[in-house]
Image (cartoon, rainbow, N blue to C red; front, side, top):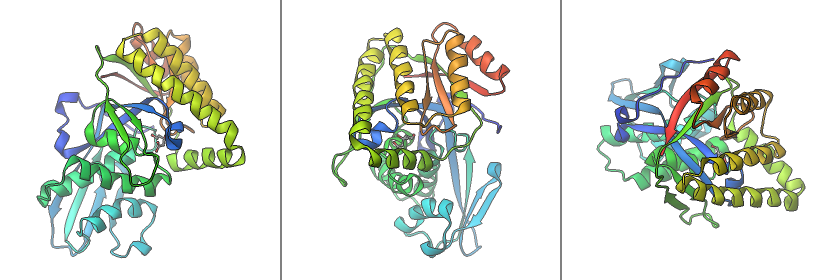
Length: 323
Ligand code: MEV
């Protein structure tokens, strides 16, 4: 099911990596203009750039067995190359001769922001190596372009957390080109969670596309669901800031029900959610794109028990604190 290694938070060198993330409340609805709450997790993607004499841009991701020469002509790139290729086009580096090695500690296609973290890590590696002097805003904007290719209609929340590595409330701009609303969330205490990883890979582009076609068939019905998610997300901000975990857990449970109504859950995700609740989690929900991927469970008292039960059922579990 793919090894993951938790990197202790202080060991993450912010300037050289892209952060993985969870979404506490508001995924999918955020694509349609609702609020969402996201936070970084102690998993990150790191990348290193080196000069070579090979005559092209060579990308290596040893853990995934990925190795390719970037096609100079965007028309010849596959979907993976197309997303990261934008970085080299925009920074006018496609003619250079280099090797990029990527160390992905965020598991692939598990709803933990791996694609955005990878884009940010590659941009930061190039920024450092070629002394481009990019600001975080520029890094974030470029990573968003990659996400748009990877996800279709990305809201921009994943690249924002991958870049800044802070818990935040996010709302996309109403008009294309305008800046989104991004508010850093300051919590009185860190919130203890278990991330349950289903092992079922799922592409966010696919679940976002499924929700879009359902919305197109009945916009009024789905807009109502997005509005409910928006309302509970804003209540979630209050609950987190007041450290009212019982209320936060309720909101997570309801949010999961609404995500289930959007049909972005899966058999494995439902099993993980049930395990978490049965072992005393105050709230449990899928996180990110769904369709597989991961769940988050709020477990202030019984974290080890919840994590152990997930592992006993054959899943991976990670205990993390956010805030
Ligand atoms: C993916 O982490 C979150 C989604 O809402 C997609 C997006 O916001 O781009 C499913």
